[in-house]
Length: 432
Image (cartoon, rainbow, N blue to C red):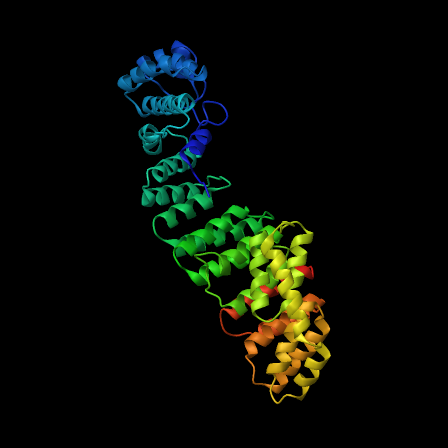
């Protein structure tokens, strides 16, 4: 995510009129000395108004020598204040002109630092403008990768009451770039809370930035928290796809999942509408087929072909459809499997049969047999409770699904169950 880029900074500094926080309008000659609150030296009065007019006309070439005269002639804090404001605006014009002349060249805004430092230190600078100057000085420090300095100045700007919609985020970015990922993430969480309290919604890029930074630092628990917050704040198929991919499918994923765990994550991606392309459809179908779930694999393939995510000419999909059809024929009668499962001494057969029912969308039968498997024992309770919760969630039983997911204790299945709980609440229209 791009934040506080040099181009964006230059635009922000020069937005609106040239004098974003400049001096009062200066008249010629002695009338300039009557400007409210300012007592200027005669030599400064002489050139201040022409310099201001040149800046207002976007003419840095004319303004430059006039501002230099003011700087050389300044004797008082008021003189130096006027000189710094005019110098600041001249340098903005020069930065903008350089960018317009060569948009691809690296922008240099370092020349803004000196006038800003003067304005911050000068007692003639109006108190109402100090926060703004601290903020802009912080931006320069950030651009120069002077992150501790940027943190200090951003903090001071906020203390002085300066308001910018992204000030909190800029401070977070400076902290994280300075190596304090945990502290920056905590600040970002606080900033999101502040927006929520104000009845606003934090931009989705805030969440994506926190996810990327914490995952880059291999901070698994923190990344997991941000993934859940992101999908809770922005529940959409696209967000579910992004979140589940980061969690369990991409190369640098948060969790390293086995095929059975990935199947349950694929099931959530499908339920949430997040199966984005043919790769995920085919991968899901392949894993289901290898797990002995040909009916589920077939349903996934047909869905992908029907909605166009899998091209009709895809030879891999066609071959897999033949395989799944053969697998379904070889599977035998489901009622016969169920009878054997009920007569078995452990719950293993009941769980396996429930899997088949889950894959065919017969959630009532799946729920019944998963519960039987738990009663009989001899099964991995976390696996069965995860899938019992999935069947209950897909059947619309929010309370039952929530209870089943809550019974899943060990990671990564507990993480998968948590994602499923979030989706269950969203499907039921309940805040996550």
